[in-house]
Amino acid sequence: MLKQIEGSRAVAEALALCRPEVICAYPITPQTHIVEALSVTVKRGDLGRCEFINVESEFAAMSVAIGASAAGARAYTATASQGLLYMSEAVYNAAGLGLPIVMTVANRAIGAPINIWNDHSDSMSQRDAGWIQLHAETSQEALDLHIQAFRIAEELSVPVMVCMDGFILTHACERADIPTQQQVDDFLPRYEPRQVLDPAEPVSIGAMVGPEAFTEVRYLAQARQLQALELIPAGRGVRARLRPGFRRPAPALPAGRRRDRGDRTWLGAGHDQGRRGRTAGRARDEDRRARDHLVPAVPVRGGPRGAGRRQQGDRDRAGARARLRRHRDRRHQVGTASPPAAGLPGHRRPGRPRCHVGLAAQPAHRRPRRCA
Image (cartoon, rainbow, N blue to C red):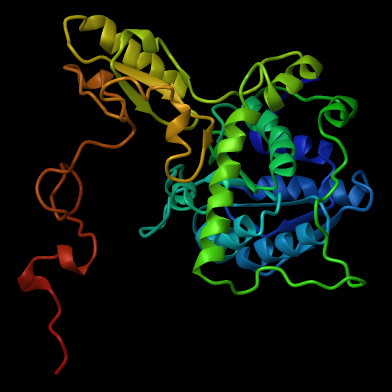
């Protein structure tokens, strides 16, 4: 059903259709609207026996999700920015235990200084934690990726992180196609856990191991990441099974735009991939004499070091590493980072007071003296 809806609300409706059994919630901007909408759905009784747990911190949210998943429940949580850092210890535990938890990360900058706006430093800080990361470009993609995430997580026994840009996607209203409950049920079967903690048959999980067993576990985590490369793409696996029921193309692995015309690939993630692709295309078309052409690739999936790079399909292309090529016209410069500041961190901008970043950036004669 097509409707004009806020990105967070669209994701909440998609999550409700996935029939989670435990939702662990702790508010942090900009993901709060997702868990707020889910709390209303649970209170109405639309999710049956789903348990909505208000925890005291992000660390507790992931800890509860770990316990719920280990006990055989379909578990979900959401966070952003410092909240993701706060739960970092438990994030690694979830991956090491192979628990199919799905978590939304509303990408937001990590302080200091405090910044609530969009940045990928939070999810990138957990790149090697063993989670699959799915990055959405639009609210529709975010909606679809959450439905796919449960299927991927449960087939591979690996946690999945769905990343959507804070405010730009979470709070923006745009048209989204919400599937029906029957469509989601046909795609996402009832969760059947591979292993369950049962008081009648007590076992220990996450016990201390030696170097050999630890290396084996990390190897298996990497192997599951590589299995995802076979599970997600079009033509087979999850994406192929999603399309017939939903009647629209599902998000795929990185898709290069006009890659046959370039010998350098630029890799990015998030909402502005379409704009960056058009900008790079204009820059390339206006400077056809340039030897190196910039070709953007849009990654939907990321993961531990090595696994993500295998998706690009540029292993045989010389110089396939990510690169930004400056265009003569600054209006066509690709990237979101602001131009480097002139001089030291304490530089003066026109019409703005002098600012310093940290004590080390202050001139020596202005630094406070140490107490004897």
